[in-house]
Length: 277
Image 1 (cartoon, helix red, strand yellow):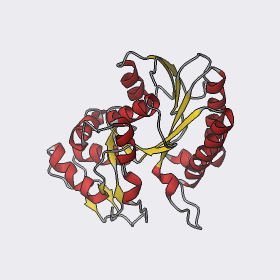
Image 2 (cartoon, rainbow, N blue to C red):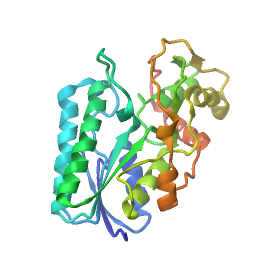
Image 3 (cartoon, one colour):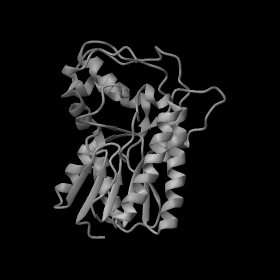
Image 4 (cartoon, rainbow, N blue to C red):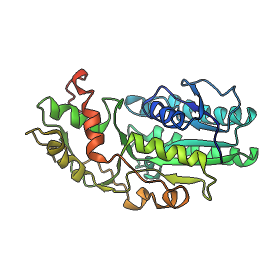
């Protein structure tokens, strides 16, 4: 599909800023919307990225997270009304995690993402609008929030403090935010055969492998303190991080790589405090 106009919700956020730049660089006219704003201008594709408290303690606020799900459906309906042919929304591999009996800090975030995915898919079918749900694991780069896991590690190492982690045994995928933006653009441009795709680095690793590379990349002597904290029990599956379906249909190929993405995170760390968690 030739994309001439696009709407981006959450355009001032971490991923939104990079996606807006990626699309605009292709000559597409972009209508950026802040969180809570609904599409009112005709466009070919609506990218829905707006999500309050995707990180931090707000993940545990049930009412807030339910509001995010409601906004997803309102945005989809508004996009349909202004003539969008496709709705592309951003999910997370956290959706695939089983929830234990004990309530965790991220449970309401996970449930809201699952609900948003399922409900938006059904509503899009009802309305007759193309729908793509893109999942991601951990994007990093310029503009990342300092409370994010990799930002915490990079910031502390550059300040001479060893960041503490659990066993870090889970499979993980860290992707440059620029590569995520590329994948999202392609998901909007191409007519796809599926309704859900993973966008990532193409090189998932065990989390501890990412973390132990950081001192070398940053040129520091301090090490990441693996095993200094209790194991969080987080276990992602390697098969969740398969970019082959998107690559086969769009030619998606990550360009930036982990090392450069880490260096880009480091550019902003001087302004951040030392984090203990």
